[in-house]
Length: 465
Ligand code: ARG
Image (cartoon, protein in one colour):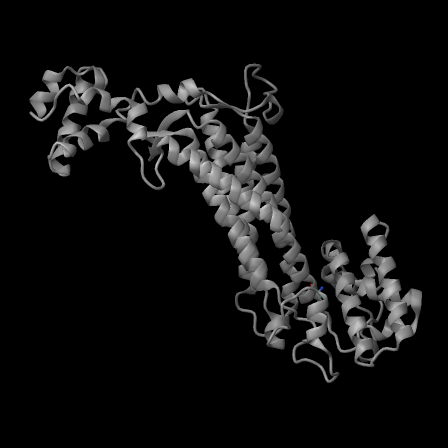
C-alpha cells in the first residue's frame, strides 16, 4: 500500500508498508463520514465569516462537501486506505475536486478537534436513536402489562416462589428499568453536547476562530471550555457505553426470564414460532435462541465498555493515538444493543402467556405463608411471633403433604389460639394480591394505573423527541 507523504516536508521516507496498514483506521471510522462533512461545513462557513476564506472559496468547499455527503449517503464515496482515516479521505477528495480552496479548509483545525467533534455529533444521534428503541420496547412491555392485568402469578426471590403478585407487576418492573436506561441516554446526550471544534491539536490556534458560531451551527450548547480536555478526553463515550452496558444487562435479565419461563418446568410463556428455532437432531425442540443470543451479547457489550475504559486509563493529556481505538467498541455496542432492543420488542409483542400455569404456581410453594403471619398481626400478635407460627404451620403442611388452605382449623388453633375461620379467605391468592394495595404494590388498581401511567409517559416522550 503506497502512502502519500501527507505530513509534508518533515518527512523524506514513506511510511513502512506494515506500519501503514497497522495505522489505517478508515475501515472503522468511515462511519463518521456524514458527521465529518457536517463539521467541516460549519468550520468553512465560520472561516469565511471571520475573513479567512473568501465567499467563493467557502461556496466551493460547501458545494464539494455537499456532494461528498450525498455520495456517502448512497454508499458511492470511494475510500482510499492510503489516506489513513475518514478525515483525510474527505479532505483529500475535496481538494482533488475543487483545488486550493479545499487545501484551505483545515486552517485553524486539527484532526484532534475534528474527530472529537465528529464523535460528539455521532454519539448525540446514537443516544437519540437508542433511547427511542428503549422506549419502543418499554411501550411493548407496558401494553402487554395493561392487557394482562388480571393474570396472577407468584413474585420470586432467590428464584423461589415468594408472595402472590401479578404478571403485569412483573412486566412493569422491566418498564421501570428501561425508563432509567432511557434517562441515562438522555443525560448522556445533554452532557456531551458541547463543541470541541476550535480547540486545534491541543492548545487552540492563533486564528480568531468564532467557536460560538460553529458550536451553534452544529447544535451544540456551547464551545468546550478547555482545549486540552476537548481533544484528549472520551468520557462521553465511556458514559454512553456505560449506559448501553447497563441497558444491555437489563435486556439480558429479561432474556434469561424468557428462556426460563418457556421451559417445560415453568411453562409461563410460549414465544412465537417466528422467534424460536428447532433442533437439527431433536424434532420436539423449540429453542429460545433469540432470547439466548440477547443474553449472550451482553458479555460483548460490557466488554466494549471495559475496552474503552482500559484504553483511556493511563493516557497522559492531551490527544494520543490510542484514542483511535475508541470507535470499534462504541460502534459495536450501539449496533448490538439496538438490534437486541428491536428484536425483543417483537418477541414481547408476539409471545403468549400461560395464565393457567402462572395461577397454578400460586397454589404450591406456600406463597401465602406471609398472609398467615399478617393475619395474626391484625389480631394483635407481634410480627416476629406471627412469623414463627406461620413457619410452624408450613412445616406441618409439608409433613401432612398438603397446602396451607387444606390444614384444618384445629391445627391452626393448636399453633395459635387467635386463629378462626377467617384465616381461609385470607389465604386465597386473589384476595392476598388485592390486599397489597399501596404505592408500588400489585393490587389490581395500582398495577392498572401504573401501566396506564407508563404508556402515557413513554408516549409523551416520543412526541417531544
Ligand atoms: N483517526 C484519528 C483518530 O481517530 C484522528 C486523529 C488523528 N490525530 C493525530 N494526531 N494523528 O483518533
